[in-house]
Image (cartoon, rainbow, N blue to C red; front, side, top):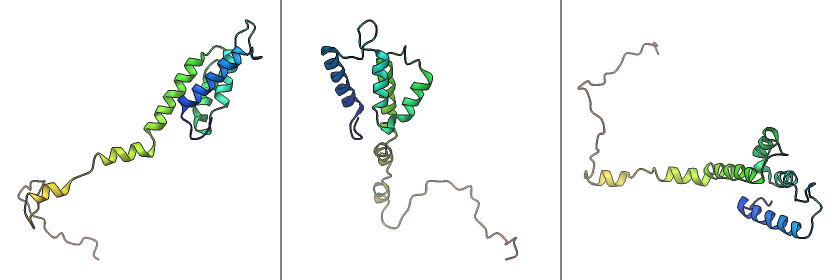
Length: 135
């Protein structure tokens, strides 16, 4: 997998290659003559970029690689990719851009030199407090 390649494009290339290997009688078959799921899962996990190392480690440590389905691994990888996209810088910048404050529109209706107070006072005035530190 290339660093700039999306997971879906890589998976498409990988499964096309697997299908070609099947049609040519690939040597990575199990005892029933089918391409071993275990071997496909192993090749898939080791061929991913460093970005996917955390999720690959979790899959290898918590799942039985002899019994896990390729589709389950693919689903886990896609979920991880979505999480990465959610946490990307672009998404964060877009989220904060939507929260921008428009001060010009609120102050333009008040006229020049006036400001709008967004709080209410209780009638108490601020007084100078004595300096308790003796400075």
